[in-house]
Length: 586
Ligand code: NDP
Image (cartoon, rainbow, N blue to C red; front, side, top):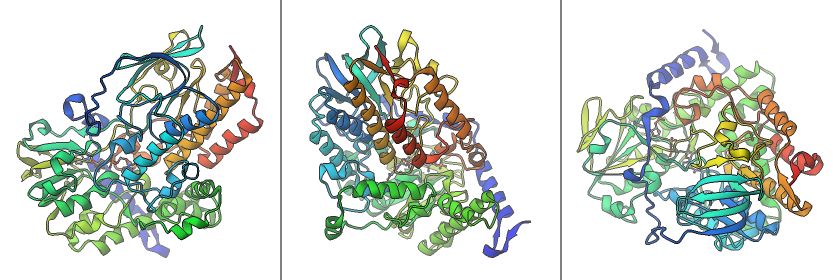
């Protein structure tokens, strides 16, 4: 037995506990346990009001078409505007801008990355977020403000889904088709469809038979709950799921419902949040360029690098991997062991926090997470765990099994039926979808080649944003680039890069933006060589969307050098790279 005396951590015992927790959650159906939120299952748009989306089809030509009105698409469109493009068309299934912040309006929805570094273009739009962690409504309004500031509403098409993109080599343009019968010709197309565009429902037997009311958190039904949840005062409400969404929504439901029952399959790791209002006097002291400095400081610190003072100073820079890298740098132990020990310490603190905050010992025990911290998305709350101290809140821990069955009147756990009037599904989003098809668009490049076919054996891109045979089509998100908890930041860097390259293409006149075979091969080789093999780590994790519900992908498509180095790669290419390997004459 290896007991690390210094911290009294019995790693062997901890590993065995983690393994047991994982094993009891592995299910043969993996990702197939979920079903999509289809049109027949509440996938409508509760925020569209009278706008039924009915309109005459559009047949015209634009300079750039952007699929997705979330922050990635908005920054790309804003920078296209700066580059002098005249007709820029954002297309979104929603009735307005905002992306995930358009859909997610559940009570308590807020950013849990600091708003000063999360919200794009704060300095340009001239906005001071009201809180360190801005509420969703404010974030949505910021997306709209970007839309107005860069005149993006003029050509936008809402309540519209792009269904097909076909490259017309002769015209050197994309023909874009939508579910509204539009046919638009576009010189450039950006796809920024976001990771959270497909809500999923749990495949719990009997779910369709429930006689009460059910909805998914991303389609909150305020008609049912009342604007302040006042209509829940005489109702028993169930929440299924305890991920980042549930952590935010539970304290609100706890206050409003006659009785709240939280059905837990796997507890989240809940760290401190430390939200506060923005001090206007401090805001006044910020010098121009502050947002970039603050974002880069955060990015470097969460990437485990030295970056001087921790400007954001929240729990994201205290996660297990960040601590682990610091510990490994001391050279005291073998690096992998150092990282594991740091993780064990961190998770001990997280579990101790549960004991500190939750009065009932059995409830506290059930709320303790037993896995390595990055097995699941860490969460942050100063109200979630405390909610279980209320007499009108009950935790129903399913010990990894999930809700057994739903009857017309309630939910069954361990053979016991718990009657409820309302079921709130905080069960997340489908993230495993194939990157070539996840936007729901049939993409066909030169000679009609489907992108799904071109990427069938793995992604092929140059620097993550453009592929050979698919000229002038740009991807934002997680394709052979590098991620960070501040997703809005990495999206902005990608969007600005794409728009910068387009600006130069425009200056040069008649060119296509399309990588040479050599440039693309080089990047694919870099991705393969530098890939960080997360498979072993993820295979030991409790199931969830991070590890394909217990079946980790065979190969990472992320740049192994991390986001700081990736951003340097992009900047360096813009500055010194051979642009001819991406610009081809028409
Ligand atoms: P998640 O996928 O993180 O959570 C889904 C939850 O549903 C899990 O707790 C899961 O349990 C549970 N579940 C699924 N099926 C069953 C079942 N049959 N019985 C019982 N429980 C079940 O979705 P979220 O919506 O919480 O979060 C998705 C992502 O959205 C986050 O990871 C985060 O990236 C983002 N987000 C960001 C926020 C921000 O502030 N920036 C706020 C909210 C979300 P199990 O763990 O066992 O699978």
